[in-house]
Length: 140
Image 1 (cartoon, helix red, strand yellow):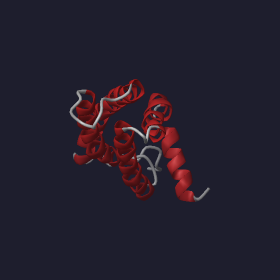
Image 2 (cartoon, one colour):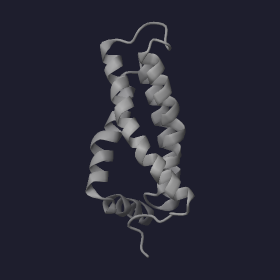
Image 3 (cartoon, rainbow, N blue to C red):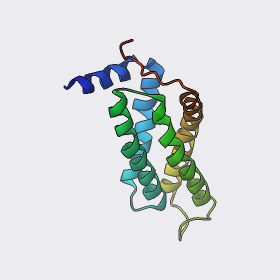
Image 4 (cartoon, helix red, strand yellow):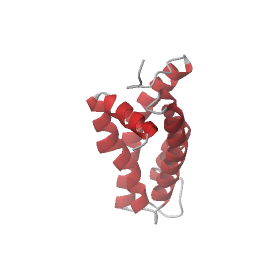
């Protein structure tokens, strides 16, 4: 493991346990689930949003050498439009045919999980924009 990778891992492990559990056991798995539903409208929308988040968060994490509040900004850009799209889908205003039960369940799960996450992301984005730029676990 390189020095930067070790710092990223140390930063991740220095986050509160509940944050690690939330991200590792719920947020990431819920947002990986759409890749198993690519034959559905909601699956494609969720997968696209997940790819945007990964494609933007990995470079931020790499440059910061750890977890930083700046990682919350791409969540706002990807998940707010996703939330709107999924609501429209469930209301029958998006897609050619109504969603199946499985697709609707996926949409509801993403709305719930990412909705909670967006509350944290809005706070973290605000704090980052106000100057809170520390990286958890980084040497002082």
